[in-house]
Amino acid sequence: MEESETMEALEGSFQLKGGDFMDAGAASKEMRTVLANLGVPPETIRRAAVSAFEAEMNVIIHAIAGTLHYAVEGDALKITIIDMGPGIKDIQLAMKEGYSTAPDWAREMGWGSGMGLPNIKNNSDGLKLDSVPGEGTTLEITINLKGK
Ligand SMILES: Nc1ncnc2c1ncn2[C@@H]1O[C@H](COP(=O)(O)OP(=O)(O)OP(=O)(O)O)[C@@H](O)[C@H]1O
Ligand SMILES: [Mg+2]
Image 1 (cartoon, protein in one colour):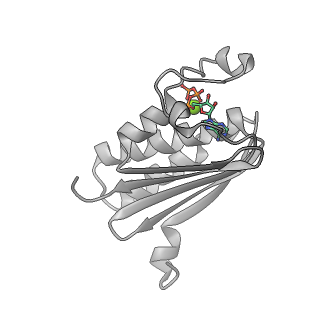
Image 2 (spheres, rainbow, N blue to C red):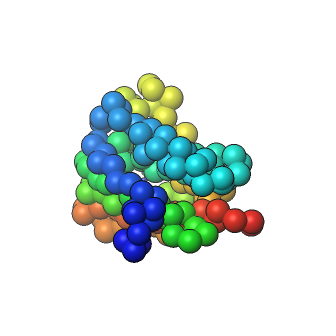
Image 3 (cartoon, rainbow, N blue to C red):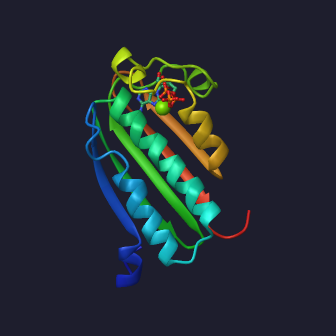
C-alpha cells in the first residue's frame, strides 16, 4: 500500500485509551472524509463510520489501550482494531445481541446495550474477532466500497 502518495493518504492510525472519551470518534470522522473524497456512496460511508465508532468505543469501554488502523485497499476498506485488555473469553457470547459486561460508568453514559458487535456485523461485509483472554483483542472489519 505504499506504492504511491495517493495510496498512502488513504490510510490512518489512531491511538485509543481505556476510559478516554476525548478522542472518541476521531477515526470514524477522518474515514468519512477520505471515503467521501473517493466518491464512496453515503450509505457505505455510514456503515463504515458506524462500524469504526462501535469498535473505538469497545476499546475505550472494555480495554486498557489500543490502536485503530484503516486502509483503503482496492475496492475494500479494512479497519483493524488491536487492543491490550481483558480480552474476550467467549466470542460467540460476546457477539450475541444484548450481552454486555459494560461497567456502571459506561452504562450511565448510555453504553452497554450489548449491541456494538452485532451492529458491526450488520453494517460490515466481514468481521473477524480474535482474542486472547488476559492479553487483548483484535477485530478486523471489511467494508466493500463497490457494490454489495
Ligand atoms: N475490545 C474488547 N475487549 C474486551 N471485551 C470486549 C471488547 N469488545 C467487546 N467486548 C465484550 O463483548 C461484549 C459485547 O460487546 P458489544 O459491543 O456488543 O456490547 P457493549 O460494548 O457491552 O455495549 P454497547 O456496544 O451496546 O454499548 C462486551 O460487553 C464485552 O464483554
Ligand atoms: Mg460496544
